[in-house]
Amino acid sequence: MDPTLAELQRTVRALAQPLEVQETLFPDFVVLGDELVMELGDALGACRRTGVVWSALQEQGLSELDAFIVSVSGEQYLELWTERDRMRTDPRWTRMRNLAVAVLDAFGWKNVVPSPNTAFYIRAVEATVEVVRYGNLWPGGVTELVTPETGEVIALGTTALDQPWQFVVVNVVRLDTGVSSSHFLLNAFPSQPVLVANVCDIVAARFSDPLTSVIIWDGDGRSHVRSSPKANAEDVALAAAAYQAWGLDEADPMTITVDARMYDVSIALSEPPWRARILTNTSAR
Image (tube, rainbow, N blue to C red):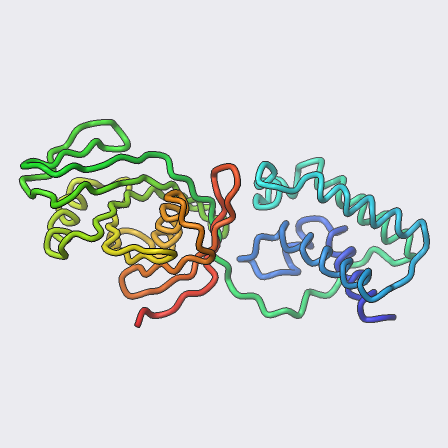
């Protein structure tokens, strides 16, 4: 069999399987629904580009399957692809599997468990991110802050700010783990480092949720963040990138340095929540 057609056969078979089988074909950290349809799309595209010939009945089956996948794609259908329970019980997944079986029948291929993809998978860090609150801290003898969770006004102390500091609260929901977190980001740039450290310590002492981090430098497509010791650095990077994008920074990817780690983060801008992905993760130099 032509290798390109053999790959199409493998990916259609994978999509036709029940969830319990599909889970054995990929590492446990991948977004399974996405991987199944992306592999199929890649294989189908390769067949079309290389001129693989098939019958009208086979083309009809492939086109119906492809069209249905497109009809349930997009941010509004995110949970369909990311939640395993949906893959088990949602009638749209039943429909996709039935269409995949119809393609197998059209080609005369047996509906058997395929071999796993031989690709090398790297654990992806993906999340939805959304700015849910924003405001400013103003210079003055006593700095006050409205807490995001209760609306309570808290005096942070007598540290006088040298300029207004903007703050945002960003909700991060990890797609690889399902864990959600709320991040309070203070943009202190270009304030003096000693002042930043003082206010950061004061804020961190008063807040447990959301997690508090301070942006100590930012520019086009880049920022440097001092993170809360309680926060996951990857989540802070995702939140900081969301803040940059919210501030109309159009760089893609953005380079976010969190303490001693540097992350390249890409954000797909659409209706919020946005989808963010960490592309690289290296030691800051």
